[in-house]
Amino acid sequence: MTFPHATSHIRIYAASTHPVNQPNPPSLIYQLSSARPNSCQPQALHNLRSIASGVIALLFACGAVAADAPKTADAVQPRIVNLYNFIWNSDCRVQNSEEVLYEATRQQIELIKPTHMPATWALQYDALINPRYQKLLKEQLGPQDEIGAWWELPRQLVQKAGLKWRGHDHDWDWSANIGFSPGYAPDERRKLVDVYMADFKAIYGYYPKSVGSWFIDEVTLEHMVRKYGIVASCNCKDQVGTDGYTLWGGYWNQAYYPSRLNAYMPAQTKDGQIDVPVFRMLGSDPIYQYGRVNGMFTLEPVYSGAGGSAAWVGWFMKSLIQQPCLAFAYTQAGQENSFGWDGMKAGLTMQVALLEKQEKAGEIQVMTLAQAGKWFKSRYPLTPPTSMVCLDDWRDQNRKTVWYNNQSAADWWWLFGHGLPRGKCHLHGGRWPGQALALGMGHARRRPAESRRAQGGCERNYLSVRRSGL
Image (tube, rainbow, N blue to C red; front, top):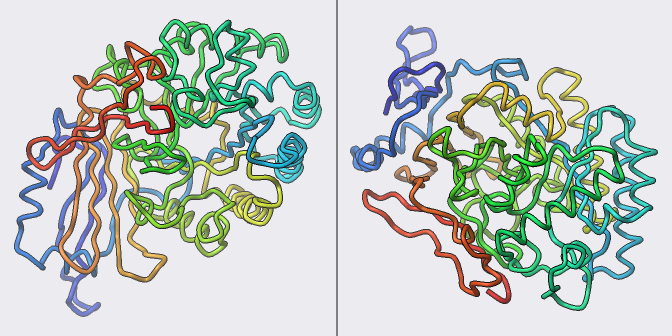
């Protein structure tokens, strides 16, 4: 499979069966290119699957990589890491939560501050208006740090915007149609943004440059960009059923410019995009964090089998740094304070030490989310093709993954193991508007459509948000 007019590329070869002292080169199996195809090519995917059984699987099982990508964080294809910690004021699931959450944030700052690595500290509204956090951040953060916004909607913000609180009898509600922006009508979403931004500026003297959330709808993002000039956003990884809702079929990693019709998919044209890059959060395991999985395989330090494991984190970062990529490689590290310091201490301490070492070695570039957004916008007027390659299986099950994303039509992946290659093509079509574009889900009281099978073996993808009350 090739794409013409490439400016950079990844080639995957079969390992040569000839003795080392013979000059016979390995055979090129396929190439991923940074050229922008105009449409998804489901027939090409079908043809790839239909190649003689066993041969391709064998080639990938013993495959090796050759690529023009660098192994350090240079200016051409950098390996970018965001240290991103978001801050809630309280959590009804945690006993004595205000003290537990505050102490977690204080300890995170104390851990990261001596490294002088830039970090983003994103404030949910209930934490924004708490004088304790205002004092902590103003006194303890350095000039390299960023204070951003976290876009879950607690009772204090909803009521100050003059809206009815539809949640439970506490300040934060986990239901998707209450705690997230799609649960509100478009005019209500803009009003919520205006209230938050006014208070943020009154406290810190400027508007936040980045806003993150598990999901932010297209109406909210457009308003934040046009009126308040945010330069970066981030949202949750693809997941099925985690936290009671599903996010599926998005641009899998790195960052994309969202469509004005559907913020969960990249725009296909300049006119159709919201001019703020959305980065994918949490550092998903490129092999095992896909679909319905047993456990959480992400860079979050609270998970002992993944982000809390020195072996797994070492494997993940080695793949990020040493495997080839298109455009740039990216991951997000850090943890929300609701897990408490005891839950994240060991894993986060280990990760921060490793990231500091890798940054000093020039292997990664640690940026704030706003810095990453500005870098992205300075290089890419449209969403670039990107890839994530992992040919080393930490479970020693001989599985290998290549993810490929582009702005126009496709989100491809192939998983190679003991058998035939498998793949999916997720269409990012401009004719599929977000389900909450015209009317908030909290008012529509219906579930958005889930991914549906389209012709050619590809999938049309929608945001599916499923939580109580929907």
